Length: 223
Image 1 (tube, rainbow, N blue to C red):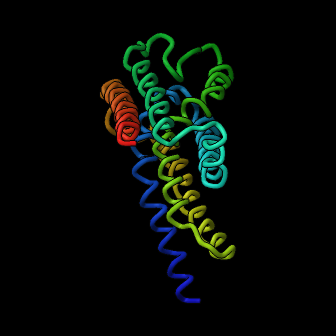
Image 2: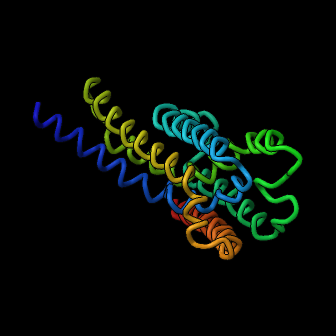
């Protein structure tokens, strides 16, 4: 029994450590903060909650069904990395080339808070949750973790995947916390630096997407 508990805790820790750098809830919260610009505290909490639920759904779906979907369409993880990287590059480029004073994310309309939040809701799944928050890197890590914790016994399979689910849930809780409070962090840096931070984060989004795409191309060449 003690061995099972120790193994369970090790998988929880392994899953959390593996997922944290690819999801990067702190850095990603700063990246997506321009989408939340102009929202009230209640709207920000509501948006962050939905993103966390979407992220949880994507991770759970990937963990249990994702590899079958890839096999069904004849896709490979490197192709997912390449496609996801290109999408993230596109999002980063749009942030870099869009003047915030015009139609930038989160400030599309100032006529009413309700209209502004309604427009943001259409972006909560794509592109904010996927591919910015949980993208190709997260999918690749989940596939790797799923293969790593495979067990021949049904009870072992359930136990190992329950441990991974706890890791995923912990990451999603962090996503919610940091997404809600990213605006405070930026304001703490100083309002005059907000535009600089947003541009820097846009550049990092572009670089992250490029890194993922290059990784996918490298894996395709190797295989």
